[in-house]
Every structure is written in structure tokens, then in C-alpha cells.
Length: 195
Image (spheres, rainbow, N blue to C red):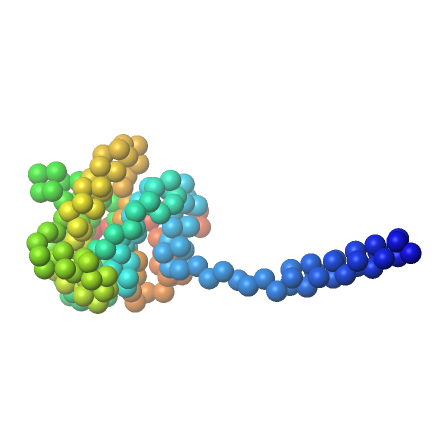
């Protein structure tokens, strides 16, 4: 009797666990997650991700989000500066530290230079504290950060002496799948955005 009871319970447990295995809910990755995964899969574990739709800049260190900060971007929505120079262009860029200008250059278009720089003052502080992505769209195309976040960026890039410092600016118009396909070839490596 005990043996029959044990085998009935075993059948019930097997049937229960089998039904749970079928009911798995797929995890939907955000566009940030997809870009981070693409970089980490190419063994690039230290970089920045700008999401203009959320008004945030994420610092990725050792493949994980290390710091998230509010960030101001271009007042005109889009992916391409050839339509309007107040667009913060999407792409993958190599940051170049310019200590005498207290900024990082990431892109040039004609005579326009696009920077990541600190921004202070009462109005900008109010914008950073608002956490309102629409209000964060107020620059001429550069990325403006709170001074303490910019200082953290400077310290982290000074510590990272072996790899280039990459900045990913996520697309607003282009599909994330085509963005990843364009910048992350099947053969490996990455294809940064060229001036």
C-alpha cells in the first residue's frame, strides 16, 4: 500500500513539474539590455549607454550597470544630425577626453563638435531633478551631465587605461535590431560610428 501511494505521489509531482515547464513566460529585453548584451558578448565590458527616451545615461562597468544618471540631450528628436544639428546622433562612439575643455568629444559633423560635458546652474539642476525625459531634451545636440556625474565619468575613464571608452547612444527612430546588426557584425567586434 505504501509503495502504491508513493508511486501515485511521484506521478502527481512529475505531472505538476512538467506543466510548469510549459508555462514559462518569455523575458522581454529592453533596448538598453540588448545593446549591453551585444557589447558584453564582444568582451567589451566598460562603456556608457545613453537613452534619450528615458533621459538617462548608464555607466556599465564589468558588464553590469554601475551608475545611472539623468542626462540632457538634443532638443530635436531623431538619429541623424544631417536633418538638424540639435539632434543627439545615435550610434557607437569612442570618447576622447579633452581635459582643458573639461569635456569628452564623441562626434563631429562639419564644424559642429558634439560633447559630453558637465552642466551646472539652477535651471539645469532643476531639469536633472525633474526626471522628466521630455524636459531633458534641451541641448544643441551635446550630452549634459550633473557635475558630480561628469566627475565620476572622468575618474572611471582615467582608471580604464587598456580599452577605448565607448558611448552608445540608442536610436530613437531606427529599429534596435537593425542598429545592432549594423554596429555588431556577425564576425565579431563592433563597428563604431565614423565622423
